[in-house]
Image (spheres, rainbow, N blue to C red):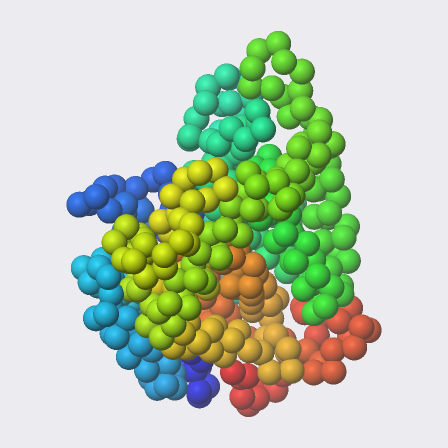
Length: 456
């Protein structure tokens, strides 16, 4: 889903107002806050969704023009995805819920347009977008820090944390520890990919690292290693400066800080003890671990997919299928997870799409993701483009493997940032990408000629 012609020329010298940046910052933060919502007809509506709509009230005409311009420059083939969606909904085990899912899919598509158009209409510079993402990341981390202080220093269990292996796992306002990691790594790469970091941004990274370590979520460790590997592959200088000399030491320090006990009179838990205990949760030979649990859930989802390969059992109709037709169509198959509970949902967006929407939709969605994230010769336009690309690759490649929904709206908000970053002033980058050239910072590379066509 990429524009096929040059973006309109905008006066990039102009800058967005502080109020516009603050509104976007709060919107991104609230999209990560699962604990901040209103209930409507039994459905949870995050405040962040309402703020997304509010973005259109700032400059409605300018936003509409920017959004329509992006749509006009898009190829038409991505719209064909409505065909497998329509068939999957029509043949669903629960048509009403599938229709709601289709509406939410449309809302997430509009989210991409909304964020893109908001950045264009308010003339955000690349640095302003980075600063806004950094502030939103800081708010996410502050939620986790507040929970940490409440639990371990005030002995008040706040924000419904999990207690796993006798240790409270920090989840902040994200709801679950692994979702705290998923939301954080949608913004953290944008900040970590910058050539020059201010002291305030370094402080935000330090706070985020501390909170993510206290979440003890395995998802965070996997994402951290993968982000480093991608940085090493695509920009050696940023890897050395921001990952090897900053993020890695911050993580080690946060890991070595003993965690106070939530129970009075109990000694603190050392970093090595935390690593040892939670490493045991990766042991797939232990049939009660969360790692084994996800393997069983994925296996069941794939069995359902093989039974209904083309259009699935219906979007958001998996639980309806499990409670109605499952035993008849898959006799003898177990519906029980590692802890004896009933498996009624998927926890992998790709398996979810295969089982619920079928092969045609999943293949089309994968094609859209690959096409959108394809960068010719891996020549990123600027560090914001690189950071947003990192965030989306990490989500669709890794975070999505433990996500409970493929319609995580914050992902599509970051996609809006990604598409806008590709149209901001370009900084030249060698297509050869030798190790020596990768050491040249984005901000020091020679700008392209003004008549150079932006890459798609």
